[in-house]
Length: 123
Length: 233
Image (cartoon, rainbow over all chains, first blue to last red; front, side, top):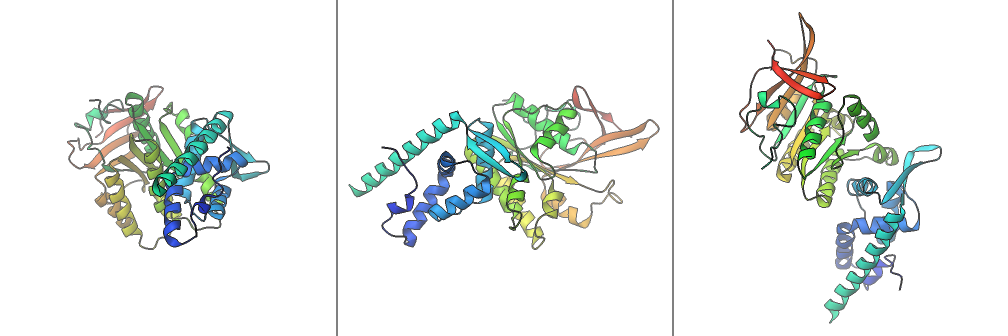
């Protein structure tokens, strides 16, 4: 089954504060997985990524935590960066083939880990 | 155990007799063109080349590519474990938002530390640029907290600060006195005009818990990189 992180808040029965607090922590401490997951869908700049993660999960990843991840993933050869045509203000990031492989595996492993934790808590 | 920083520049041991304690916050001051960025970048890259560690160089004055071009023109090569972070993309993409760059810088350090356990060196180029694009409200308190946070991180930090060509009467301006007071060390770079022409110098004004020379020493740069020569009088 193909894993997805799109419905992360659905893991909570409601959007009550106590649940949001945990979702917030999980996403912030695993932000690299969520950034790569977002880039599996399309190329984006740091601004678009922050906006998309906020609109999808209601979690704000600050600029100081997102851009370093983009820079280091690019250094490691997992991301390719290029400026948009005619717009030098926005650097778009896309996954390289090596990055796509790692992103798919990380997303799958992360989803399994979440399911495992959920299973263990309900046992 | 490998040397920390003393052996990273040819002749640095002439002015620094023992290692700088880990976690020190060091100001590197001087006028434009006195090799502040080159000295710090050179120390970091040489240290990283000899040790299995990571370093982070944050530049606010120019983008990473332009900084690297400048370093290449000085014959200074970047090691792969020396990471450069610039704010260009962030500032352009968020140009309509107010960014707290001191907080951002703390987050950037934290992010690199999360990624690389053995991040031991950090440099900010420059404090002046940080001030010029930051809200000035409560700046002294923000700077105090920033210095404290850097110290607590346990990484040795170099904060580059451009100063007027010469300190008037040997004193720092009132604003720069704050940083000088808060820092564990101050390295001053400058130029002296004499009979033999203009010479660059380096002088350690202060280095807590570290035995060092007080004299100004000549600083040179050639195809072998930066070197520290004998005292200048």
